[in-house]
Length: 302
Image (cartoon, rainbow, N blue to C red; front, side, top):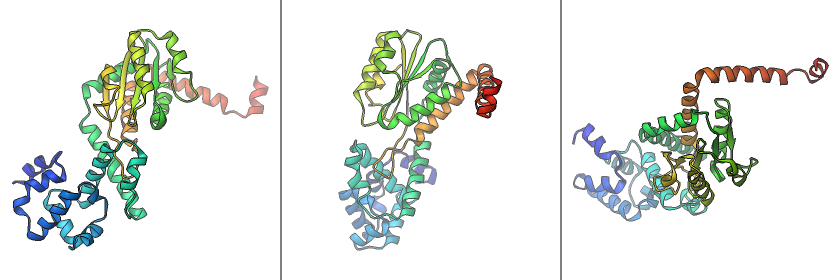
């Protein structure tokens, strides 16, 4: 198999797929290791290459050579795949913790693992992005005729707050339905068909965003969602949705790709509304300058 054809075959293939494909090419020692990997996947890959080799009576170099033969860029890349498999099956941080931090890792490995997972999350989110949905959402957010409500709960709240803060600099009538904001019940008293709800849905899924999205739709408003899976319960209620990858080497979801996607949406909205955004940001600079003057001097001028 040529390198280009092998890379194409490897795309989306799991360790088990690759082992089956390369079975005829494995040495006797590699076949023994492959059998152990097949029986213990994905948890068997949560240990280091050295630990895996010691458990199965072989050398770390044999482990590394096998994974290179299987088409992985490194053993660490195979571990990333295994962690993603574990987190996909276990919805809560408490369930993931024994598997993901139960083994021995150096603190340097924690750093490198976080970088690798976030790089993969960014790449996978970008490559799988529905550009038509992205453009449609950007145009809805830039509309400005109605109000834009932004809702997130639990761990998605920091991303939601960042998005609301920056969209408020690009258009009027942005309202966050999060901690410290008006409750969703009060906000929905005045929902109109020209309004838009942007909401987040990352496991563990909450019921409240689903109920709120349904209420917005019943009032004729548009709903857009940022989710971690096409199976997220908000997807059927959304006019448009975008997907982000959240895999991590720790028990906790990574929101790096979610911030990337929100950053891109803010950039798109600013581009669509460029004359108004330039003027608004200049007014904002003037307001900051007025508030940052010496308080005593400011009182004298007042």
